[in-house]
Image 1 (tube, rainbow, N blue to C red):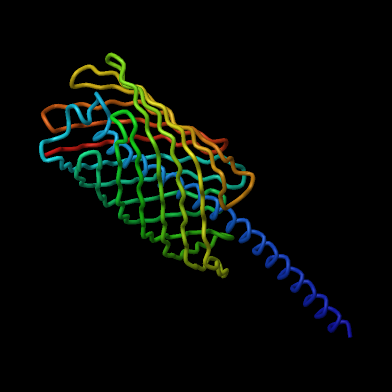
Image 2 (cartoon, one colour):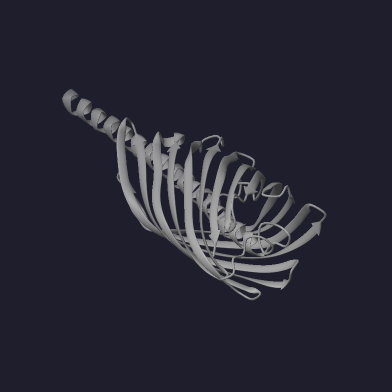
Length: 320
């Protein structure tokens, strides 16, 4: 009789422990899924902003009055080829969802000037490598993009631009639970649409510009499995507006500039306690070593409440 009671008590204790561990795993997995959704949303926004910025850099180079564009860099055939590379360090200090790591984006493209119209296409590459501290894990991806773009000069001082990108991504998610490491991968597709209008003011050796733009992204993510938990297919989205201001000074072949871009989210997926605004500050220069050639370097520092971004962009172009 006593043996039966002991066995019953042991069974009850084991059941309680099992339920407790299962509940802890379920709670941990739910938190991790929320954090991973937040991270992918923030990274997608950072990558999309970088890609749109590269296209805007190229369009500015071809359309800006009195700068490195129409007056001095546009070759007789109106055809240009270019390459840009951007690297950023991301650091999120939000309690319970900390991560840091690198995001690299690169692009090559070609375009044709047709009077006031510029049409072009670019191919891009992205690489992400984050350490997710909340689960002693990692989040990584590689991806390729195709980006057609267009701009139209209403006047020499007012330019419209638009671009669309489609990106194929391959994520790898890593997690650690109770000393056990788990890993799985998922596919994702991201679509980004951007449009804007830029106004220029050419005053003496200064070129001032302001760009009002909008950006919409939608990323569809596949399912994956970590620590015995299945994460179903999901999607993230974001619609935001931007206002960018920039001042450039003409020193002949060397043109330094300073700028800032304010971003405001109008709607987005993810947690409501994530800031819906941010600002990027830029400092850089463009240098023209020979006819048709332009080399540029830009340093950027971006801030949100818990997220900071620091990096740089290198661009090289040649116009025929």
